[in-house]
Length: 251
Length: 275
Image (cartoon, rainbow over all chains, first blue to last red; front, side, top):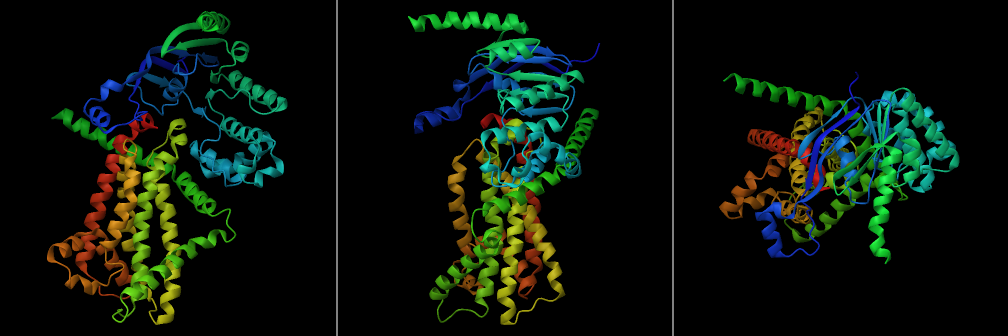
């Protein structure tokens, strides 16, 4: 039995929101004295496993804790309770173009992005041509990134993440990157990753693509796991719940 | 007893792992600093030239203003004195304000990727350091015509530069650490910098020290900037060298550097919560 790629064990995260909508001197004093008063539970007791070679979807409403959970898996956020065990090299695409400097050329940003992910400069030298070709940027690679269209920008960012050949890819809501041609290409790249027993965790509101792409899925609501299972079942349950929730508003 | 030993050994191992991690990311820090240097003036016509023009114009402004104030009793070589002081001070003040912003500006990076967070203030430090070295070129261009020709002792510049680098790193780390939960710090830093500038022998000549009250003079003596300025001026402009300045700044650098880095690193795991 191989170890799971990601094992999330009873994870809870509480935030103490720092910014008050109407800060007053008295409120500030009170907050300094007792911080617990303003705690918000973003995740409570979340547990699940993602196996190697699996595409795992996470769905739920805005504010359900999906992004917080991804940050825990990327291990940039340490949970208050519980732990996250990760086996393999992670590449994260929680946001596009992390570490980019928009004033610099696309080529320079390939270096910045890769170095930020922990690569050595020499390794980037070797990957450079491949990334440029994959992103289909051609001559635009020498232009500052701020002049890029959003499609070009996303293509560059996605190409960098894929070129790192991660074991685990964390994606937040970016399946809809680029035009049809590039979408097809990125889907192929992700399937290749799965074939070499890589792992993909995907957060998305596009229920269709979760159903289609992910074998299993998890539904989060207010920081709690509502359901884990085959993506079709979970999506169906979520849809029923959303429809039920929406009714009173319609009336 | 043994548990204490084990804990100590664990700590040493953790520190070593952190340092190794930091070292392995040195290219990232360097690339980020160079990128920022280039991009800061990318859309101006003069581009990188601004890294030399900025200190030059600043020095000129101060020279005109304080030349007017000290008219008549302007000490000999006041221009070099003033400019060297301004440039050295700017190195520290830029590291400090850059460090304060380094975490907040790069919140996207912090939230997405795992890496030793100290990289971010270090990148700002590199940027400020390169700017400082550029301003030294301006300084030489201005003092050489007045007859101050640097000899081989210029190589000793490494000493105050290294000390100031460590000092600045500690300072930037402390400010960055505090600015995460208390963004108010960012509003405070410019005033602290201004105050510090006036409390250091930069825009007023050293002879003024004899005229200020004893308590204030003591404060100015304790000011680490006073020591740094003394060291730099002895290397760059041939002012008398003082051992006390060397020991004083070394103590300040090691102290501030150590405290700053420790405070910062201990806080790292909690940083992402405030972004």
